[in-house]
Every structure is written in C-alpha cells, then in structure tokens.
Image 1: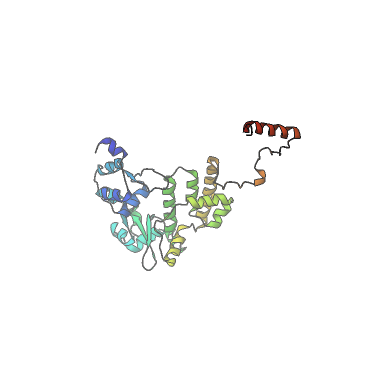
Image 2: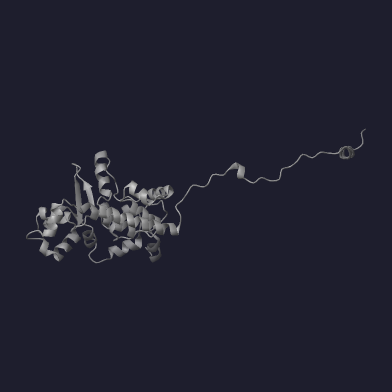
Amino acid sequence: MTVKESATRSLALGRAAQALDLKRGELDLALQLGHIRTTSGASSSPPRVAQQEIDRLRGARGFPGALRERVRTVGAAEGARLISISPARFARLARTGHFTPVRFYLNRYRAVVWLYLAEEVSEFALAHADLLSGRTPAALRAVLDAGEDRRARNWRGRRLGLLLRGTEDPWERAAAIASVLDPITVAEVATDPYERSYLRVLRPELVPGRPESPAAHEVAERLLLADHPDEILWHRVSLAEALREARERRPAPRPAPKTDPRSVPRGPRLMPVRRSPHSRGLLTRLRLRKAGPVS
C-alpha cells in the first residue's frame, strides 16, 4: 500500500477491531476514551477509522497488549484481587467515589454490575496505599452511614465529560447535558418547545444497546438521570450556559411559516376588451382580405 492510499483509506469499526486485535466491546471503549481517533464522514454514516490511525496504533510500543490493557475492565471481585484487598473494602471505596466506573451492565437478576478500568484501579492503589488497609477513615464512614452511593453519579459525570470532549457543536453539547436531566428540569431551562425538540433530536446515547425487557430498561433509565440535588443543580446551570452559547451561534430549527393565500401578490387583473363598432368592421374587412376573392 502506498502512502497516498494509506492516507485516504478507512475501515469500518468491525474491520478496525480485527486490524487492532481488539474485541468489538474493547474497540468501542477505546473510542469513548479517545484512545482511537475516527474519521468524520457524512452525518448519517457510522464513524470509521483511518488506515493511518491503524498504522499508528499497530506501530506503538507493546502492541497489541498495551492497547488492550488500557481498555481492560474489572468488576469489584477482580478489582479487589488486583490490588489485594477484600471485595467488601473495594465496594466501600467504590461507593464513596474513589473508583469511577467506566461501564455497567445488568445481570440476569437485574442487578447493576459496575466495571472499572484496571489501569485506574492499579494507579489508585499506588497513590492511596493508606486506604487499602486499617480502619476506614471517619469521613468515609459518615458517607457510608448516610447511605450514599456515588458510583452512578461518577459514571454519569465521566460519560458526559467524554461526550462533551467529542464535539465542538454548541447544540450537541447542550443536548449531551440535557440527556442526564429529567424532562421537567429540561423544560424549566429550555422554555422554547422548538429548542427542546432540537435537543431531543441531538440527544446522544449514554449507553449503547439498551436492555430489551421493560424491567431492566427501567433500572437502566434510573441510572442515566441525575438524582442528587447538587448534581441536578450543576447540570441545570451547565445546560443554561450551553443554551446561551448555542443560541448565539444559531437558532434552533423551526418549521417554515405557512403561506396565507390572501398574502400572495397577484399580477394585474386583465379587464375584458370591448370592441367598438368601427373596430369590429375593420376586423371583418381584414379577414375577408386574407381569405381572398370568392369564386
């Protein structure tokens, strides 16, 4: 392949996963985290990965193991084994916000299973060895005693941050923020119905592949919306600011105004021509002259 061909060729995501020796789920996570750049095509077409980007990643040191390690995820049990603590302590640290989930799924019992980046778990253990053993600090015990669980909130913040980082369009940024707020809160901020409609059109999918069963779908929907007063206030203020910037860039689309038939300008009205007796006689003589002599 020539350099010119490599610069213009791109691969669909499935082919890109094969070329990078990744599972499709690993590729999707790498895209979300910004480890792999995609090409921007038509708005309706799925993203693709340029051959140059494939070549760059394949030529990196430690490929493919290093790339695969950057997107390796662990659950609570595996994460606890990774840093040599008990699953109970890992769960306490996760609930108090020390580990930020990168994904979640629902098991067959419709229980939420949070997943964390193995790389981040290992880095936390190196930086906070004091939290891996001994008594839980009083501040963390107070959070646990109050029944707080910051995993969903931290996941929403992380996912929203990745979405905002992936676009410069102000309306798309506003739609991403609106996606973590309930419809009533969004309507209080975006009072224009056409703006709310535009936000719904641009709304990104926080979780690809929603659960099909109604019960599992309801559980997943609860995780997508901000539920703590401080979190709701933060996103509400952020949405108002994002809408202000979006309006300055361009207004939300609106339907074309209906045309009132009475307002359509008309041409001059043609009045019927009334011929005088003299003109009628002249026309008769002209027709007879054209017809020629009667034989």
